[in-house]
Figure 1 (tube, rainbow, N blue to C red):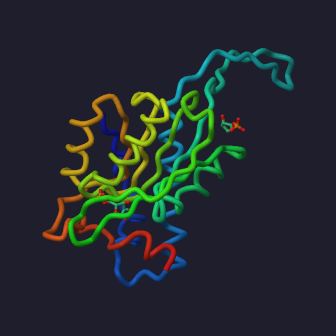
Figure 2: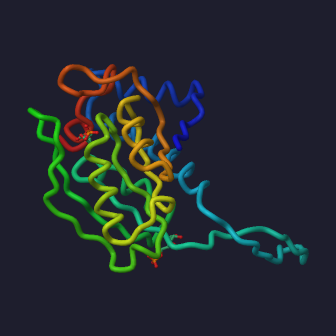
Length: 208
Ligand code: HSX
Ligand code: HSX
């Protein structure tokens, strides 16, 4: 299932800045971080909570809730690493796994080079991080890696900034129980399988 962030004027303004080809790296990082923060908070909204009672300084009890699971961020390198800090800003001691997948820009086929994941990942909720979902090939490959480590599809939340309709369809048909949280669904892909209108190569714009 796909959850799109509420398309508020504020969010569109942030997206407009990072889409602008004249936006320089410092601003690109600053404004994309604001969107990433919203994506992380929305992702956390999908995790289960249990009842938890506290006493306030006024001596009253408050029947609240607390998060009951363990989580792990997994970034698809390189671009996905740009989302790690946003997750850490919300979850201080969060564990982070890495999967290095590179898309061959001739064929648009993803290739897996490396992965390193926490040993107990199968017991965790996984927030999969990649800002761009074009054909969906890279993220699918990452999900296959996670599944091979015993992570259930329903425990994976894929956080991404811009998705193409093609990428989302690919994902929905392959992994129907997986949740995708995206800030924006773009028009589609061009003949090189780049997202349009898009924002160019996220990794290049963020890391240089
Ligand atoms: C974060 O810290 C999340 O709530 C995680 O559940 C927790 C990290 O747990 P661990 O990886 O240190 O066991 O706030
Ligand atoms: C870019 O290509 C992104 O960060 C993703 O890792 C990937 C998206 O392309 P696709 O595999 O969805 O076509 O580097």
